[in-house]
Image (cartoon, rainbow, N blue to C red; front, side, top):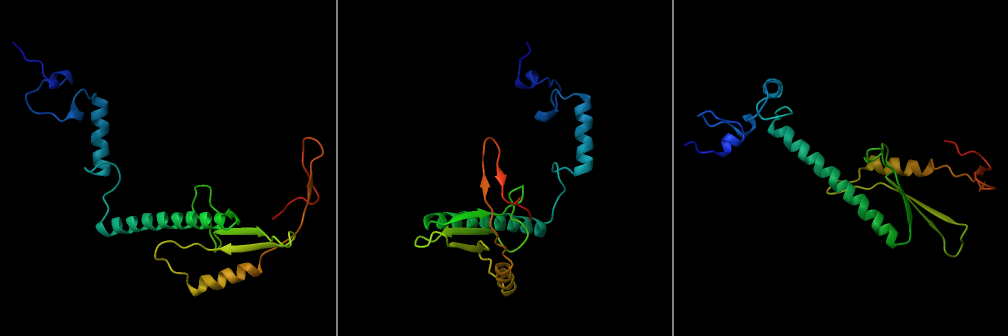
Length: 166
């Protein structure tokens, strides 16, 4: 009498102990697996990295995470103080090049035609603002271009007084 075991359910009838992924594998799948192992090494996909490179990658991830947290908490604080903000990000959500991360705006309560603007560079974690970054931020304040425009909507489209340009 033959005892039906889990190995038989998986299609492994040999006496040696097979690995789970070897059971019911087609010949094409076995060939693909051996090709991947030759190409990428025995530890799976991706190349083996050194200990130093692993530490650098972990540091980069931590830096990115603390930077995102710093921007988030800055936005929360600005919101509580009554400021509106615009954040500059790339399509993938990373910070844009340049020194400006956020622009905060607020209308003056006593003089509603007066607009306050603040350019922010946000740093996270133990990052410090360098003197060169301070100089660039002050120079960016001098380069701010302010103009005016108005729009009207007669029916189902918008007409600008001047077409917005760069």
